[in-house]
Amino acid sequence: MAKIQIAMKVNGKPVEALVEPRTLLIHFLREQLNLTGPHIGCDTSHCGACTIDLDGKSVKSCTVFAAQADGSEILTIEGIAGADGTLHALQEGFREMHGLQCGFCTPGMITRAYRLLQENANPSEAEIRFGIAGNLCRCTGYQNIVKAIQYAAAKLSGRPLQEAAE
Ligand code: FES
Ligand code: FES
Image (tube, rainbow, N blue to C red):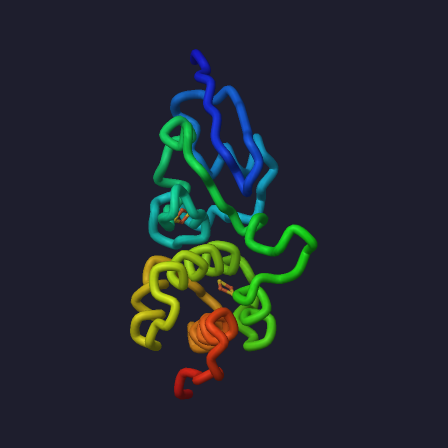
C-alpha cells in the first residue's frame, strides 16, 4: 500500500514520517515513535487507555488514523512531566493518593485529567467523575483516582486540598 508523508509535533518535538493510510494513531505512536505510554486496552474506543491530547482535546488514539493527525500537536503521557523530569502535579497526585494499582489505565487517565483541568481548574467531584467517564479502570474503584485529580487541581491552583468523601 502506498505510504503517505505526515508531519506533526509530538511532545514539543517536530516529527515526520511515512505511514500507511490505514495506520491508527495509537499504532503510529507506539510502533514508529516508540511512545509506549499510551496503551491499547480494547482497540474499539471503549477503554480510554490510548487517550492522548490532540490539538487541545482528549482523543482516543485508537479511533484516529495517523494521517488525520497530520499537522497537529500531540501530547502523550511522555510529555506531561517537566523537561527536567519533575513530575506534573497529576503524576504526583496519583503517587501520593494511590491512584493506581496495575497502572495500565494510568497514562490515559492522567492525560485525560490533564485536559480536564485545563478545561476546568476547579472541578467538583461529580465533574471529575463525568470528565473521566471515557477512561475505564479495572483495579482501583476510581475513588483514589478522583482524589489524585483533586490533589492536582488544588496544587495547581494553590488551594487547600478538599478530598472526595469515602
Ligand atoms: S484502546 Fe483506545 S479506547 Fe481502548
Ligand atoms: S490501575 Fe489497573 S486498570 Fe486502572
